[in-house]
Image 1: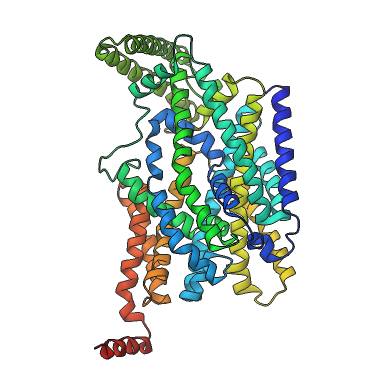
Image 2: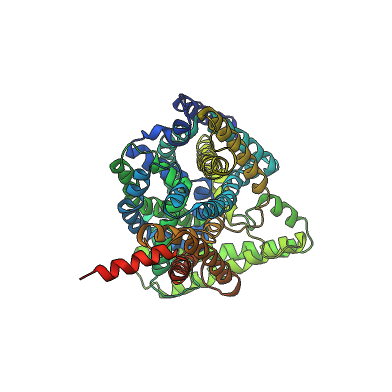
Length: 570
């Protein structure tokens, strides 16, 4: 990083934190602190929801995911528009009319205290894990850029988040997210334009598209029915829809956004905005990763993207031979790419050049795998993964001064946006569903406001601690979704029961959630089924078990009423 990059970074950090604290002024009651006084317009909610999802993980890992596996990941979101429509028709009006602070507060109204407590604890576990992962992403970034240990970064991030989240509450987070999304979109456009600009002379935009397609990076739709593959059209439409229903309908970090809307109509518009915009935005981010791949066909990338491990590997015995093999494989792939681009441009028969390119790509991948294997030998690890460093290498090594600072600022504050929203929701559930329900039931509004701020500090500290244990994860974007899928199916199932199965009582719902979580972890441990399907397995199990138990645990009086109602029918 050069002087101008530092100026851009600190100017943006200063602006966004100051702006958040400014917009959050007046959050001096529990309702204003946790829900912004329920006065937010639809566009602020919609952009805030999108900014919360567009975390640092989105920039660091989604682009890198496309570099490695193409654009197949976009299928993950195919079910999201359907989920947004369903939630706009069901969850939004139900939660608004119930006048609750959390989704789990509604479960006690519908079922009982133990069901509310169980689902609240499930949320705290899974969202606490996800908050740590989201905080780890900028630590990866700054460890590369600044060369200091990433635990220092997580501490700095945690302190900054705690400061402006405790002062401004949800209102501060939401309006800061609006500003954040403007800069995010600008940074995405700049990243793509510069990727095309850095292509060697003679390689046009159309050539880059053809080469990305030849390398199977522009492969957004796969209609194979394969339960072990996470990214097919069917896993996205079905499993992705269940995950989106759970995330936006049961996860307090998202529910809290539309609970803060000034009306049911405004909250619906906020969700429907995401239904329209999310897939194009995610596809655009993946497309940037595919273009970075094409750029690295001609500009030699490092054999190991993680710079610290790359330096260690370079000092190990046998590295010279590994590096020579890598350099030769890169040169062969580059030449094959040039010939393929020429044959495409001239309209000549490209079958031979395409076969040569595929062979060269396979040999290059094998050479890079050998290089990664050196890290495993040096560090005594297994399956070293440097995927999360690919996009960072593009940003720090190839973009011009000033633009590097802009993109780092965006990634940095995207992480702050995502983590602060999660920490705020964790504090909300801790206070409303646990502390107020079981510890101090008749405290003053001022008491609960200060307890909310204390829990905010606690969860920020927790996220920092957990962030430092995430180094073994591969692609962070997958890690976050895998963590959520271990819990979301059970949460979704109990809300489906609450909304649509009026005869099911609290005891049946409680044991249904227990069974659903058991089914999810059993599927995880004993099958090779993709994690997206965990959401379907968990949800269906909750519903089936609860319905089977209902005749045996429904109170006798309720059974008599049901029988009387049947007998009275003509």
